Image (tube, rainbow, N blue to C red; front, side, top):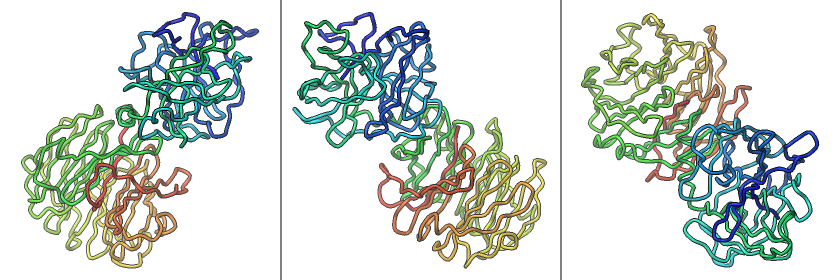
Length: 540
């Protein structure tokens, strides 16, 4: 095995810091001789090249999310800061080469997160261990560093160690058999427990027996930097980075909780919104809409008042403000829906069986609530409503008498007449109980649940005004009874979240090629009780 050190030998407690090695000059090149990485059990081990052709150094790294690596901070030398790297960094993961676009160093240990320019296509991230290994536990270290005979191997190598001691941030590793040494170039490679979970990263070693080490050096011990307690830091760092995310609200009883689906498909935990934005006495319904990196949250309190707050892109929250105080009081509020058009927020509320609309403009000013029936005409008692932005126009679907009706508010502020959705897409099997919409480009997706939630359907109103036929979602969601559903466009794809009568929260994606991803169950960590309703939106 093999660790990493540049020509400048930094020394700490007698151990050579396992930073990136300076690559030996090959004919016409200063880059590593990159081979085909092992596509087996350790395919999440990445090969890093740091610097340009005259200063290139090699390290290892570990894929911990579909677009994030974790490696040793010392690979980048001293003074590394968060943000864009000051030197080019390339990573080979699986069979492809990626560029590193962002650095996020850890202050208290030799660790740094690296963001890749795109999702890794053919290697799955390693799982993080929930705890440090016990004393004398067996662990495996992996990396792309030099071996006893090769400067830059083309494949990942592994060796067995024993985690003999540790501190709050490090593990001490002792070789568990002959030939086990961490050499130059192994820094940032994974240290795994017997379940194959990540417990630490290679950091420092004696490098006894490694190619280029003094033959008199026989010590093979090493120090690894712990990762088992970093899950929250990793998720928080990723959640605050720029890029597409699915902001999610889950209501359980009269509480409301916020979490995020990250670009790699994994989720953060959920936090109580009222502890962040203020206690409004319990919540009966909620909606969310994204503007750039901000997440706007609307909540109807138990006493039927409408409140609004913003979770900023930096993770801070504003305080709940009473919308009725600025847009007009509505009695018997039962549901709210919201969508962004540019930097304006359009809010539709159902109150007293009627449907109302208001706008919060980019400066934070509100228009008064207006009764949509006054502009479009009556359709009877409204029980549910949904909104979407498509082609820069507000689209609204309202449910009345178990039927869906659709209208559009043009950029001039004028509304079209109500249209019967069933006449355009086909009649569902029974009365509609819930509806959600999402705009993708010029198209508006509509998702409905019927027959007391036991059937779910999807259709599209195309930008040219035509509709696709109603499609049954049984083959996508399975046989479920939906309590609530929410659709959102995220990075050009339709995402759909559903809460079910058997107390699950499900999520799926309709890709741009019109195929559906496998439906997965959300881990509602931090949500007490059972999920009642869900609302999602995309932020950038």
